[in-house]
Image 1 (cartoon, helix red, strand yellow):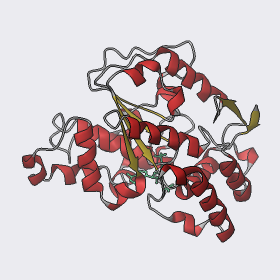
Image 2 (tube, rainbow, N blue to C red):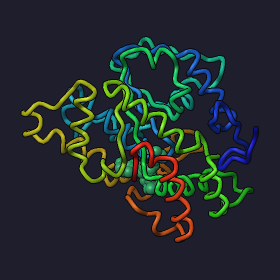
Image 3 (spheres, rainbow, N blue to C red):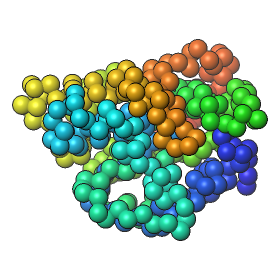
Image 4 (cartoon, helix red, strand yellow):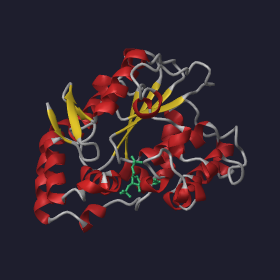
Length: 302
Ligand code: A3P
């Protein structure tokens, strides 16, 4: 089946999820060819759930000994997080017949993907590598996705009407959607294999960033020492990766990660609850019902 895409002209359905055609090629190539190793770290999100933030935090966390002088010479000061932590299906496996050489990368390798759990490579599921999944309140994810898509759509297609986008989100026809099935795939896995999949929420990271970063460090097997904590290493990483800091760097104000995408598109507002400024009461009611229906019985709420 085919439906109209938000950014690309069409979406294709594959195994219950929707993809832009080129992304699906990449997703399948990643699934077929990627060989995971036990030290790999895979960051997974639904689009617009805080991927950029998670990439920055994980990169800074894992490389904290390599770049002790975090205020100078840190790669995050001069490179966008999406360059430091590439997407599998968008950057590395974009063309079906090109298999990237990833064996020479020094461990731990950090990669990211928006692939739903069912489409992850077998070797990734079976190895001892770690998966960090970050999700976000669907109301804010929808709002963020709507703004982002409008920036990237061909001008001739005009702004995506909000009502239309909203109905499409509720039906599940967004890139890598349905949103709910994506979240539930990883939620269930995190309950079954908590040592393999860590499940995070953007809202919790916003509320207690210090706590969550320390939890991520423990999960990835590189907990902060007492000495590091008292030396302010945790706070330094959080400060470097904060929305305010990253969004004001020259590279993120004026740089581009590809011919179409400007770095500034990844930094809009960075807040919880912006949906209140855009969604009507009726939309909120409708979305709350869907959320309860999909997540309620699984003990997941936002
Ligand atoms: P908003 O559009 O609500 O502002 P992704 O990184 O998955 O594409 O998600 C983008 C969303 O994360 C945007 O949300 C963006 O502003 C927000 N974001 C980007 N960097 C962030 C950071 N360092 N801290 C918190 N939020 C951030």
